[in-house]
Image (tube, rainbow, N blue to C red):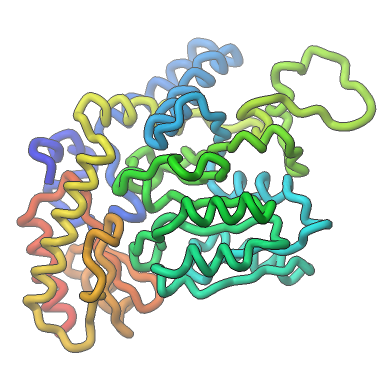
Length: 382
């Protein structure tokens, strides 16, 4: 727990509730409400002229992303969800000439479902086992030749395992002429993750989880070679600056920078909220390094208390050090979904993915809350 933080989440009542889905949906700090109200007030006061103010909030979000990735000046495309951004990315690839996409069986549903459907329509989708994670980057690199893209997570969403070796994978993709897209959603905000070694990589993520920005705040960091690509799925915001000009026949033009991968009209309320929360993180020095320390301390406590339960049919990976995991503790059980339901009945909000019961703390949780949650797990399991 980061001392004194919980009081800033009074609307979500984080001190009164055991909300252990921090890897999926964290509480929003109270300042987020101020951002939502500001969006309403700007719309009421300025009507259609509100967009200048809204675009400033969007730029604050881009600035926050650049700061997290230690990538000053990088073009950052925005969208309400990562699916939109992944579609624009895929639509820019030379899939007719190189119809091969390489991914893993440990990707979030955004990639799992969409790539599966594209495979049904004739694309060659090579889906490698995500485990063992220690060799995943090497195995993906071996499949990169001939592929349009390799798509992989920085942290696996089911069990929180950090995927090592991404810079070497990026180098292999560059040599093979394949693009590398890294899903950093489960890394940003709980594991320091920068663009170092991934300068030519595409990095997708969002603020719904550890960044506490809520829905509607997703991004795609564009590498330098993005200027050479023309996404087939493109929105009219990509020509927002040229709307006064008479459209010319011929090839569809694209701007330089982040707007090259822009979409269309959106609800800017989420960006107002994001701007307030990003400022809140700065004011309270909630840096990636400080947050990593907090999450590691919390997952260590959860693991120690869980071990003391001595359960037979609920286990965890004790061979891999906790430093090799992200911001939540994954427990394996054939009863994972049932245990999650029982915990909910006891007032402990968790979730499950397949055989994994996921316990996701947050920096506003006290040690006492986490210990109480594990005690409830023991009762539910028995």
